[in-house]
Every structure is written in C-alpha cells, then in structure tokens.
Image 1 (cartoon, one colour):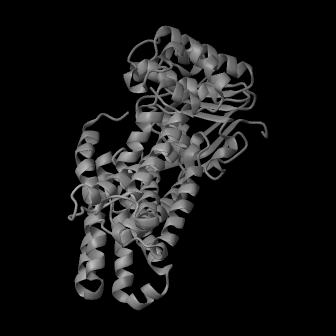
Image 2 (cartoon, chains in turn cyan, orange):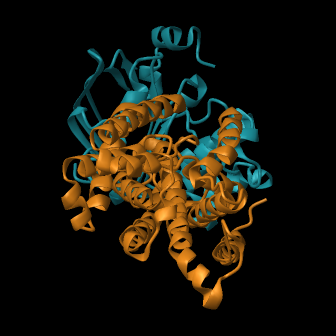
Image 3 (tube, each protein chain N blue to C red):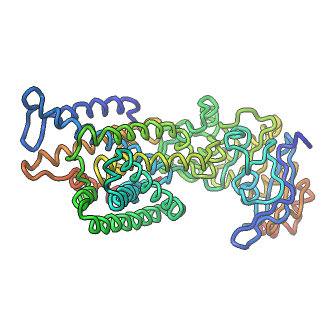
Length: 233
Length: 314
C-alpha cells in the first residue's frame, strides 16, 4: 500500500449542515486513470478538492503522493500533485504568456502551448479569449507544472467542457500518456464517451461512492439515464 | 505593450529629477537659497514625501494583490485611518510619554493599522470586490470618528490630529521627526518585495495558488503585517493619504504587466513620484496659500478612481 498515489478512507465533509461527502473510500495506484462521474451535486468537485488539500475540515484518511495535503506545506508537493479547478480564473487580465510563466517551467509551457494551439495567442489578454481558449490556457499551465509523471497525481475537474474537438483529443491523449508514464489521473467529467474510455470508473451519488470498476460494470443503463438522460454516446 | 525593467529605470530617473525640482521650489518661488540653505530646509520634506509615497505605492500593490481587488488601497480601506487612530489614542491618553519616546508614535500607528487590517481580512475578504471596499470605508469612517473624538477631548493635540486627518503633516518634516518612519518605510518596502512570487500565484485564486505551492496563511500574515507597517510609517510622515496606493499599482501594471517582481518596486517609485508631485504642486501652485498633498492627490485621484471602478477587471 505504500506506493499508492492517492488513498482516501472514510472521507467525509459537511458544509452548512449538508453532507457533501459521506464515507468515501478510494485508492489510485501509479499508472491508474479513473473517471469520476455522477449527477450535479453528487460530490465530484468536493472529492477532488479534498484530495487536493483544499478542505482542511474534511475528516477521514487523505494521503496524496505520500502526504496528508491538509497539513503538509503546500510547496511540498506542488509539482507532484496537480489540480485544475472547474472554473479557473486569473486576476489582472494577464496575457496567455504571462499565465504560462506562472508554471515556472518555460520549456514545458512552450510545449503545451504548442500542443493546445495557444502559441499564436501568447500575447492576447485572457479576457479577450473564448471560454475554450481560456480553459486550454489554464490546462497548459497546470500540465506544464508537472515535473516527473511517475507517482504524480493529477486531479482534473471537468477539464474539457469548453474545449473544441482538437484540444479535447489532445487532453485525452495526454491523460493516457501520463498514466502510461506512471501518473495517477482522476478526472471528474460529464463526458460519457470519454468516461467510457477509462479502464476504471467511479460513481458518486449524494456524496457516497456507489460504484467502482470497469466502465462496462459501472456505467449501467440506469446510471447513464440518470446522469446523462440517455444512452452513452 | 509591456515596458519591462526599462520602466523601473525610467521612473527612478524621473523621481530623481522631480526630487531635484522639489528641492528648488517652494511657496516663495524658485531658488535654492544662499549656499543651498532653502534646499537644505526642504530636504526632509522631500525625503518624507518620497519615503511615504513609496511605502503607499508598494503597500497598495500588495493589498490589491492579496485581495485580488483593483480597488484596494490602504488609504481607502481604513488602514491609514487605523494608524492615525492609534496615534490619536496615544496622544490622547499619554501625550508626555508619546513625545518623550520617539518610537512610541510609530508603534501606536502600527498597532492601529494592524488592528484595522485584521478586521478588514475578517470581515471583507471573501465576496465581491465591493464588499472589501465597503468594509474598509466603514472601518475608515469609524477610525476617523474616533480620531476626531479624541482630538476634541485632547485640545493640546487637536490641531496636530486634524492636520493629520487632512494629510497635511509633510510641512512639519524635520530630520528628527522623519528619520525613524522613513527607515520603517524602507524596511517594510524591502520585505514586501519578497512576496512577489506568492502574490503572482494568488492571482490564480486561492485554490489554484495553494495547489501550486503558495502557503496562503503565511502570505496573508506577512502581507498584512508589512502593509500595516508601511501604512503606519507613511502615516507618521504625511498623515492620512488616499489614492496613492490605488493609482500607483494601476499605473505600474499598465506599464509592466502583472508580475509582482516588477509591479511592487515600480508601484513604489510611482507612488513616490505621485506624492512628491502632489506635495510640490500643492505648495508651489498657489503662492501664499499652499494646499495639502492629500488635497492635490484627491483632486487627481478621485476622477481616476471612478474610471478604474468602471473598467472591467479580468
């Protein structure tokens, strides 16, 4: 168990009297890619935030890249545990290149800017971009921050919702490549087709983990109807 | 277009020129006086304006970065008001002690500024930009009322405190009065420069900054203490002064972009330029009827504040 990248045990979290996570247990080993699905309000974002160390009041076991992120100094695993929030933002209307500079790794940023078709937008203020371009810029910053994939943890909250087909394909390919290189990737998504490509799918409902296994077993017709209102594409 | 480090060099050179000009101009007109006597008399005032302006500029840039709020300014959010209230309390309760111990007034100003800063964080941090500003304005009004009350109860300090609340203390500048606060401005400014990288990360929001390695609690603690120190030291030199801490960071970001490694030092030099210009214009524009630096600054700053408030902010 020592080399697990993410270990959550009896994870619970309450906010304003409402139980957002209720006894969740989940482990990810190096090289595992997991899709996290569920209806709106099922607890996906809360689970990712807890794993990222953003909910100090969460109870239960949280070990991410060998540390409890609630108490470890933030700098201790900044390049080993990456988190992309659902609606990233940036103050002061920075340009794409200025956002990229925050990754602190110019060569990696240049590579990701190229792969996500951002190079030509480098001098454009973020506020002037489309929603998809902005999401791609934030993704590129997060991806460029990763130093060494093996044993790293990526927590991505609906990372492709606003992206066009080409950028979406790049992100899917990147998450596959990282798991092949030994990173653990946990992706919250409403994209049924993408979720079905992961070897493992975890389903949340009202803060509880109700299914965990290969997509054939977890993405049942009943679940697909509940979450997506129809058959998976 | 971003100017980069050239803006810092250019603004420092401009500040030097303006300081030279400020030494040569006064209510009596142009001239350095016999053997530079007039310039020597004006020197403490010019130095005080430069030190206070720099502290205000870098303090404003830090407060805006910390709250991710383009309208944050220690002058408007009550931190100066708190500093002045701290001084008023000491002057009201123990005037003999205050004047006998040179460090006591800056220390009282620091305590007052720190108290308001703490309340500002507790009450106004989360939520829309307007909440912080409204909380600050409320704290500022409360502190001003407290200062006026003490001024009425302590007649021997009344004129001093009223002049302070109108930002009109630069005229009292003497080597003895300004030495310690000017040193504190330098100290606070130098330490604030070390916050550039975490403030950059904080532009991404608290969650992204923390997961990118920024220790938010440590940053907040250091930024609040050092901004309060800068505001307290500046208040000791000039009294209450709004708008410098608001405008200098905006000008700096317009010139060099959002990186705090450049914004913080440039906001300091631009703050010094703004305050020195306001003071020089105030004492030279209308011979015989000098205007306080705060009044001149408000004439320039208020319309710009409205313009900034109406701009969209990313």
